[in-house]
Length: 151
Image (cartoon, rainbow, N blue to C red):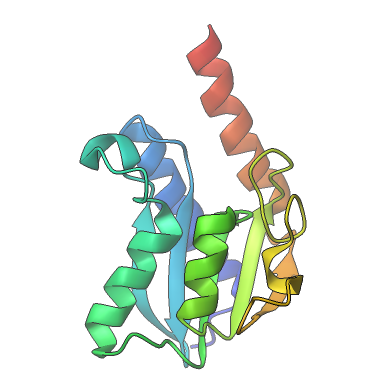
């Protein structure tokens, strides 16, 4: 059975929806290597009282524990929202091969928005970056979440 990038992003979106149900900002992440899911996570900053508990960080921690290595060479990260500077740095340090993300984050993103972390001379490793995967679904999930909070 062939699993596509869209299928993996659908799983990341499911993690984002689960985060929203927990009252967290709906961001979900999945790490895959050779077609096998190594880790999946959604934001847990409020639940864990931890500002570093972003979906990407939690997924990287899980995948490193699963593989017994601090490097995730050959692995790909699927995340529903453009990573922030903290997460971009972790992606670089983990040596992830590819980053696929859904919605852009003009306020907090650091890949195509803001500081463009991977283009900086101090960045030791930059993944291949593919944006806009399931972008409308990811953006809609975020818009709905914040609209509910405002009303």
